[in-house]
Amino acid sequence: MAPEFSLSQAATNVQNLLDWAAYANPALEDEEENPLDIDDSIEESLGFGLKNSLFLRLHPKVRKAAFLAQKDAKFSEVLEKSKEKAARLQQRASLRPGLLKALREKLKGMGKKEAIEQVVAKSNASKKKISAIFKPGAKTKPSIFKKAALKSLKKSKAKQEADKSIPAALKDLKKKAELDAVVEASGETVHCRIVSESEGKGKYGKEGMVEVKSLEKDGGEFCQLIGDKHTVVTCKVSSLLVKQDTWLPVKEWQPFSKLSRKSKGEALYMIGLKPEPFASAGDDLMDLPSQDENFDSQHMLLGFELLRWQFKDYLEEVAFIDPYLTTMYLRDEDVPQRELLKKTIQDFGESDSRVLLCPLWSAKTICHWTLLTAERVEGKWSFRYRDTLADPVEDSLKKACSIASLLQKEEVSLKIYNSFQQVGSTCGLWTLAYMMEEACSLFEGLASRGHPNINFLRMKFVAWWHQLSAEKQKLEESKKELEEKAEKISVQQEKAKEKALQQLSKLKSHTSAAAIKAQQMLEANSKYFKLQQLSEASRYKIEGKALKYYWSKE
Image (cartoon, rainbow, N blue to C red; front, side, top):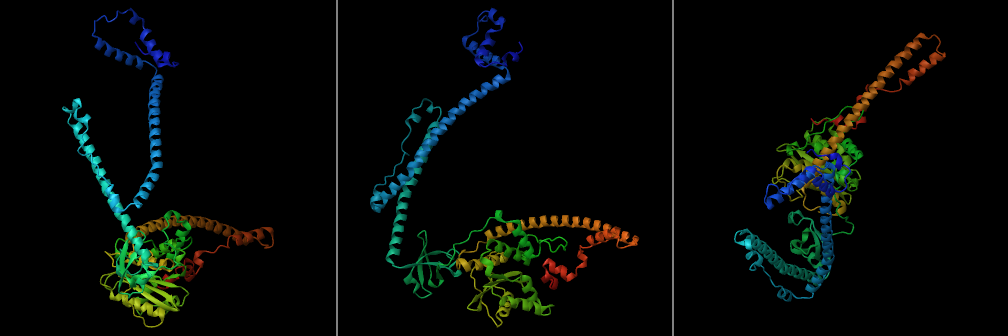
């Protein structure tokens, strides 16, 4: 018998339809009850199949509604259970702070011995679940006892670990109390910072409290610095610097999501890579440096622009000497315009800048970057030279002395200022890190950043390079569109100009209305000058690349 879906489309009760399907067929009424003498259990199983087959004869919409009703009922039960669980967790969370506070107060009023005596280790490893042992299926299912034993053992281990942590916590509390007592008994203390790299990267930049009496010792003697987390650091007295009230808190790095297109354009312009309409294409952006030999002067300029964007407020009194300038000056005495290069470097020395940053490139023996820093102290320049190689490059030191003497206008001898050494070919990134430290130390104090994090700086540099690369591509596309549009306008103007000239040549009277109109058209289409009409020097001046116009890298 085929299912009649049309009869169940308007049904509202599934059970009524099942009853109807069971008694509506007259053939079923005439048959005898159990004519085949089937066993009761078999007959019952057949009855379930009959009901299922009758359910399948219902309309699909009715069956779907029945399934959804069952799901809604189950979901409501789960929702109620989850609400009860959330209420229990909330109640537990509200009680936990009060209980912990009460426990802390209780521990503070006890001695160490008294507190430990009250701690009783409790283990459930020896206890066995009776239900697991005497369960009827325990003999046939040994895994039941195994699971119960493992669970009990796990709980006992967790309890033992918790019991061990209590004496450790009491020990920490005692250590804290002893340190507090030392600080109080010592009398007057002062906040200091370790500013010497000779103490090692683990201590460099650490801050804490130091006794005033300790600072009166000889510089070679040792003293103790107590940190914020009550850690004790031993260092030389000469490595400490008293923290000043004028020092600013350490400034965090800005995320690149705050980098605007205007800032990207300014960075590209300062490096000489910004594409400008109606100007020559300029240099291309170099690939990311894979090793130190590929860390070019352009990468150093990119790194400084990254620091300028991150620490704009700090760099207002800091001047940056372009590596192109120093490289060309130090390359050979026969370099054209050498006197002009010398005068440019000396102008930096006569400027009002508080600090000069001069990265130096050497390729005589090995390719290597070093940093020369000049700080104005009482009207004279004080120099710091940094070289991170284990075997310093003598050629780099000579170049640094030459530039320092040029700035100071007298002979200057330099020594290596830093103690940290590079690992691998990372001198370019180390130079950037020290440039950042010099800029931040003006406002945050010496060693405010601690040991330079080269991996972090590399990550920031790569992200910065990708940002500028994408912006340069956008500007090149915009430049191309503007130039194509200007070219079309230029063609239209040339045609209008030729037409006006033809009209003027045909007219005999130059005072007529037609002549005046033709003259106006000629003037309107002749007011725009072309790039070819500018001199070569003017074009380079507009592009902001006068330095490269006079001195090429080669």
